[in-house]
Image 1 (tube, rainbow, N blue to C red):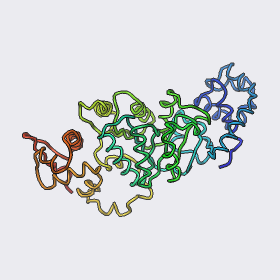
Image 2: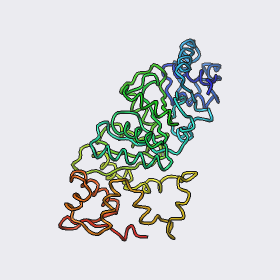
Image 3: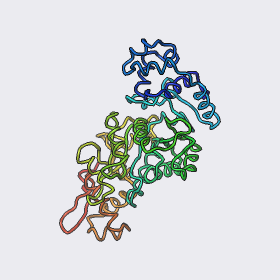
Image 4: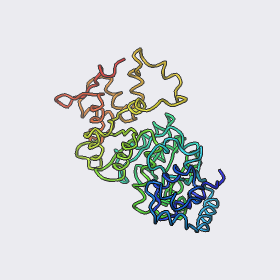
Length: 384
């Protein structure tokens, strides 16, 4: 995509002190595009909500076009693309949020930004359970035709991107820095793989912008804004993932949550979201897809033919949609009720990994536990 005049003028407005995204959007709405903003009088500018006399004066007096052109030249030399909120390539879902970024810098495919997407987010320091779940859910989503959105940070973000790339899916990484100041630096190779795989690395921060701590909560609204829903893999009670969950709710997006053991500190945020009714507990891919618009075309065209007369997936289909480790447990329990120690031995899971998986399956209605630590399937819940 060539750099357009509109890009230049929007970028100029972004450089003016006091003009954040909301004010910039209001100016574009009031004048139709960016060019008339610079032709407007001080009085006309002050008629726009949020534009006071000082900001109006900064607009009418703006004369730093050399800086604007330098940034545009830097963008072209990097091989990046610019897409503004008025361009047809701008992601439709992102445009719907109240503080949509007026302009984006993009490495990679603009088309991938308009794919049906689910964000996969979580702590920068996941435990083994969190790592495994991030891999399994990212793979399932990617194989089902969703783009997987995350923030390229350490931990769950990195795992989500890596697994999506490994299964030839489309990943979208949203940065809290300029494209030429990628953070963390060690994910540079992963960013290139995302682009080579047909995904995209994007940011609202101009070239040269460092990865400041305050940028990351801001970029999280883009992570959720690009997505139909947000999947919280593992989060403490505070942190970026909880911010993303709340942003998603504000944006009327779905929030999906994996449950955790009560004494697992890294999962307290997940359990809090479930307890507060702010996120849907999930145990299978179907728990996500039933809450989202159908993909077009569907990744599995004969899926509908395998549904029962009530329109629900059969037991075998529901089991197939489970994450690998949960499916392993359910498959073993199809043979009959088992004592938990025997189930651990047969599944190959250590108890610290098995217990949260069992809790997840029980909360989702797949299994029941009775005295003596015996586990069995809740067949009335999953039968055809």
